[in-house]
Image (cartoon, rainbow, N blue to C red; front, side):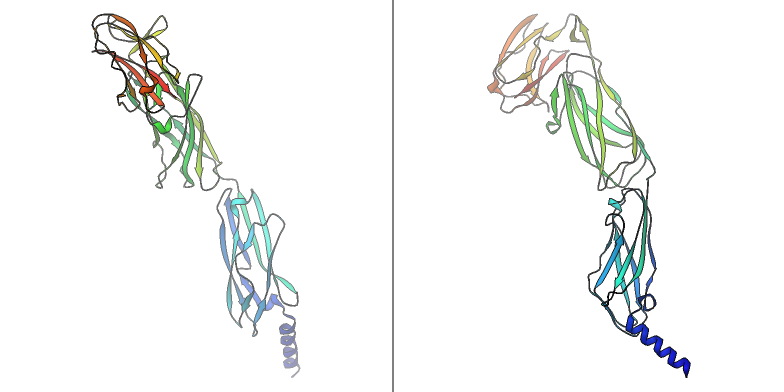
Length: 362
């Protein structure tokens, strides 16, 4: 009889004062988000709260106590009502994308109406430094003839796969007197004899692999102030939904070598018969008004101006049909003959040679 009385008193005390540690339990009692690498996305876990008492619990307050920034977040709406002998899911997120390298921990406290509290779930997570990844980007050395189209590939010669990557941003530069871009959208800007092009590209969702060509720059070669231009990759950055900072990289710049020119007293000439020369004497710069072109040629020659896609400008003055014998003359060109500003190419051609110069119309 004494034991029965003690049991009844104990149950009355539990139900009256709400000893959560015995009546409410959590599985698991410790919610471990595990080891996550730096830059990982938001993580979400669930814990099951069990009401083992023969009474209804109705609590209005759940609070996470944490020493650092608010990295652990409770996603449940309050208040929470738990019927007798029932279960309820608690959903808790950890902001791994905002966490720094190190360990984080916190406790989820449960409050009843009498303000008594107990730790319901222990929370912990660890952010680790990601393993370094590597890539090597190579632009090959290429050869081309003057006045031709050329494809310049950007090749991943070494690459550690990473599914976070969605694209890249890059900047390249080269000698603007012997090479220009064929795509008007990749015109970039011109500074001190260089063309500087910014590139931003999205990549295939199928991912990247070693030896993949991630981009092809389409260019047009011209007769300029050199026989060769370096293709310098001045900046490169992977782009993803989260920060991508653990890549170690190297880059190999490429070049374009013109195989059909030589220099005569500093003047570039096409490397054909010396007795059959074509020369555009006047250096061309950015043009805003009417301008003059001075040409020299042997035997038959024709002068024309084309756009970077190879289309001849219709309104160009028809003052230079094919001429016989040697000639050196100055051609006056009207700015009004160009409908749109942009990049154009002056082409002087004979039966065996082509000479070209870059022309920028503003």
